[in-house]
Length: 606
Image 1: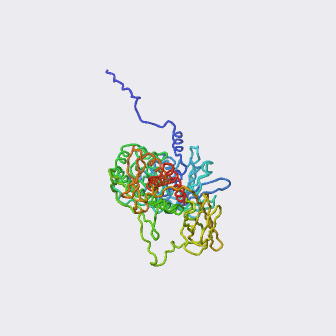
Image 2: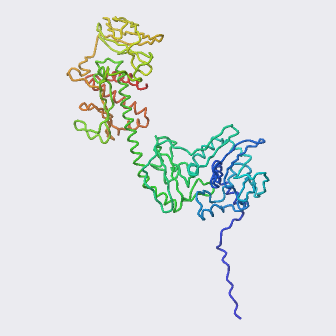
Image 3: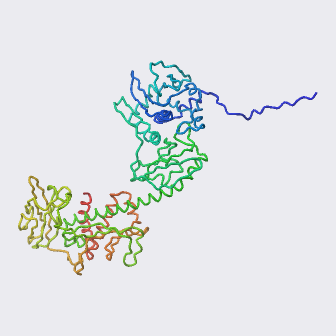
């Protein structure tokens, strides 16, 4: 008789098993690290149940804080199945049967109440029409289901969590509102559900509305196709702000507030402060516990590759926006510098600054021109636009002034010039300029009284707008003042006059001896000359100040708008002084620069 060989059972292979079911449930329950996310999941369950109205109540009863969520959805039919099928959601089966618009799929969302409170009770009426209630307690493996007797069978579901954990009590109704508005933005929009929050602790009521973006909606976004499912993009171009970010969503529910937190997208343009909006995908696999992460599988890799065309499109959009902003900023800089120079002109002797000669009856207009070549051997000014100041006629007598052009009440007054140097026995015309709060000049409605406050000298017609000051025949510092009065308002203005026996030859310093025509204010443009030491140059042929935007000082100054404005203003001061005083000594040039820069910077602040 032949003996049969016994086959040995292979004990080195098999199926994974959970060694301790309760430990596994505990780990799952504690995997949700955000109580707001847990509240959002409860609200999503109501939306999945086709609720049209959801009310969240935050309050206190018998010294216990509680959170209640009430909906008018279809209710729960089988509480026992929910309690005994952790990790096996009935929603997954419904999806396989063709159901759409359902978000849950793991069957563990109910356990996230552990991060909110100590116990949860859910009362619901299913298709049977009988109200039942299930009660779960944190750190307790048991559950209780019982009938709820009532005269009228309630519809929908009521969820109550109490008492709220100590660290979660600060979640006010407003915080819940703001979170749900972003977290469930598209789900609220697509379903039309109304979510109301009653915060009885603070006695306030809030309505959750889908978050609205403030930027300009980008319409011509490339169509993104993926064989695994749909990718929806809604992006906005906004002014650069640190809070602008692109959120990653799945089927209308936010997965991550900012896509730039993901390594694949922690780069331009995804982390650009110019962009905000959402990218919604239907096929990436979320991490079951927290639902604020995903699995880096083939589906994720396919999603990343699909966004490449969108990336190139956004880079072009942002570059175009930056060029427009730089253009606007350059115009604003020239406008402010021009205005500051004009205001400084009132304080300085007009005959000494030929570039500041702005004829009466004219004003300045900022004009943008295309790039041009400078004279001589200068290189091309690249693609940077050129900004110039253009004098334009002011039409007088052609109708009434606009409302914003009419000066208001007296606010301040200055004497022009406010500082000057004249020879002994010389004469100089002075003028009083009265202004309103917006620095508009008053033409009438005020009186003026001139006087010599300190020193010697004579003023003719001391009650006129224009007076002539006659200097004494001895050197000294003279203070001339004027009091401007309108009704009960008085303003004082002062002029410091230095009377000296020695004067700088004006023909040598101002360059006016050649009989050349005096010009208005110059414009400016950029030329990138990285590594070269020059900061700026003046091109007399085009009346342009060329600024080296490749210089380290310009790059540093450009990091701050105010610093960039002051830097360009200093370059204007340098070029103005060098052009107006070509034969002046080094010491005199420095004195002139300090003089012009002081009055100019004073007016830049305004």
